[in-house]
Each structure stands twice: as structure tokens, then as C-alpha cells.
Image 1 (tube, rainbow, N blue to C red):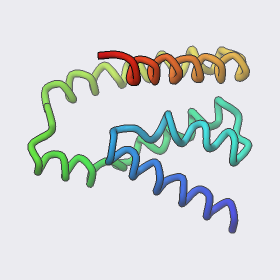
Image 2: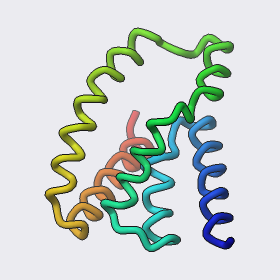
Image 3: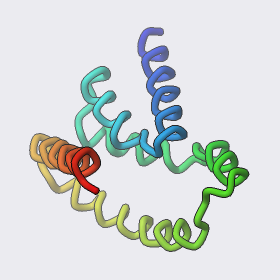
Image 4: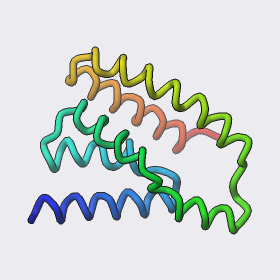
Length: 120
């Protein structure tokens, strides 16, 4: 029962953050699955990618659409290449040791956060 509650809370928090600031899956759920649920880096990343297969963002997208904040061409172009990148990225990820992969993940998030905080 405790595991179910943790997973439900993670989904809710990540969904709220996703709707609020456009983050959730990678930045919130991957580390949470690793540190709270004991998943390996590979298991966490694979689980989050599977979660994205479902139309989880449809209601958030609807709200942004109603407010006029969706750039359809941009989303479609990035979405089409995201599919290809996801395929090759997952192939590469599977071939990397999970300790190294966790470090790569952390460095990417750290560098992006520095850019967000101190960049223009």
C-alpha cells in the first residue's frame, strides 16, 4: 500500500510541475524512482519513457491551447525528431553502466539549472 501511495504522489507532483513549469518526467520522477523506490537508473528512465507513451499531458495541453500558448509547428517538428532521438538515446543509455549514466543525468540537470538561474 505504501508503494502505491508513493507512486500516486509522485505522479501528482510531477503532473503539477509539468503543468506549472513544463517539467516532470525526467527531472522529478527519474530521481524519485531511484531514491524513494530503489530503481536503477535504467529502470527509472525506461519506466518514465513508458509513462510518456500514454496521453498524460492532454489536459495540460488543452489548457495551454485554450490560452493560446501552443506553437503547433514547433511542437510537431520537435516531436517528430524527439521520436528518433528517443530511440537512439535509449540504445546508448542501455549500453552505459548505470553509475556513469546517473552521473551524466545529474551533470546535465546541474548545467541546465545553472543556465536557468544565471543565464539571460
